[in-house]
Image 1 (cartoon, rainbow, N blue to C red):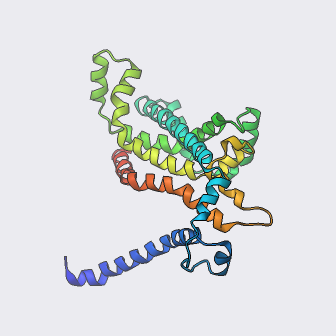
Image 2: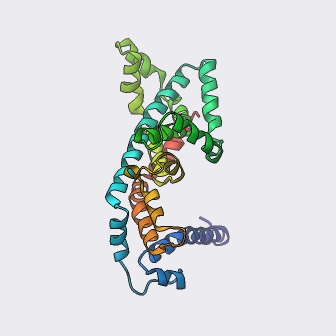
Length: 278
């Protein structure tokens, strides 16, 4: 590498990268440090480093929001939603790619177009339809909603990846006597693993941290309260318990943050693999 080129360009880019990293890490610093302060300390100086660590904030949050129950609710909603999104999206994408009829092409166009529609523009209609179908306040109701909103991007990703799967493998399976379902689940589905991991990670991050859809669909059903909904208990009309809310926020994002850090490299690999012939 040319030394002068490194000093004039690479060094500047490294400095900019460090500044951007500090900028993005600043919110994490504020959340972590303020989660172990008292409310008075937060109000006096939110940016200061805590002089005394009040770990009791975390134990208080554990009791107040019934953390194990909220964690279990978030977990089961996320797991069921992601399983159905992966299953139905991969099957739909396979059908669209292998049978490119006008109807299937139109369905794919609708799914791609759905990705650009803001969720806020559908809120009122969503509430009316889910109420009419008696989906509100039910586990299967919110899972069905996540399936509907998660399928467009997932089908798009699977669609690009399935084009890279050789047709010869499927033809060989048919010659051996496999029916269409056997060809898909025994031959094609295992080959989708790279893009499947990407779909799982993206949808898990979104569903675990989502607040708006649960507050609309779950409503007042306390038995299904998720972690984002539980944390809002610390904010009332006249009181705002920032010390407990920030501790609860740390407890809520820690599992999904670890999940992302462990599997983040598969996001780039999966998207890159799916874009080869997409």
